[in-house]
Length: 198
Image (tube, rainbow, N blue to C red; front, side, top):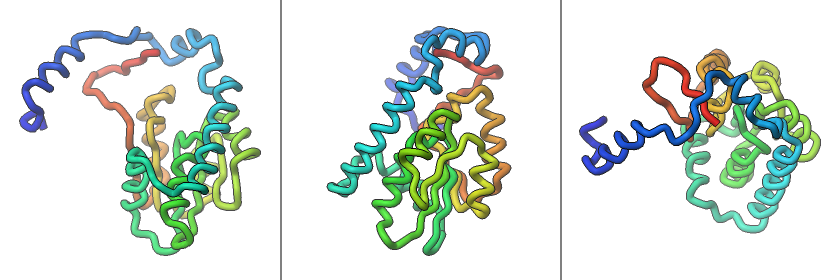
């Protein structure tokens, strides 16, 4: 892969790798202690996510023009070969942002059943304010998977890196044995130890 990277970009990447732009923390628990705002359980953050998803849903209902970043979701959906039903487990799916894109994209051509796995406070609030007959919220991977029974796609976008043990959560998602697994917006590194930062 390095042969495909232009030399000027290689130089910038190597320079960035040598810098430590973020403070490195010894453990996930230590990082949580430094978050005085309760991290992802913060009520203001939960409410902001809910409100943003309500606005996004209403905007899609009035204007079905997709922004370029919607392509990630559409590509993920395209990886499946399901017919009229599409069952998705969305790990870290916030307030159902990707569901709204998929629902708008497919229109009435597919029945989309979408279970989002989120933090306990967000899952509880989203279930109350955002769920419908095909969009549900859970705070547990196994419960979300059992609810769907057979899963066409496990979808995760920018979520694994925010868990205490990303590789353990990835193993849990693989263990579901969905027909397809789509991971996007997730950084990886080649270090031998975890890199924890805030």
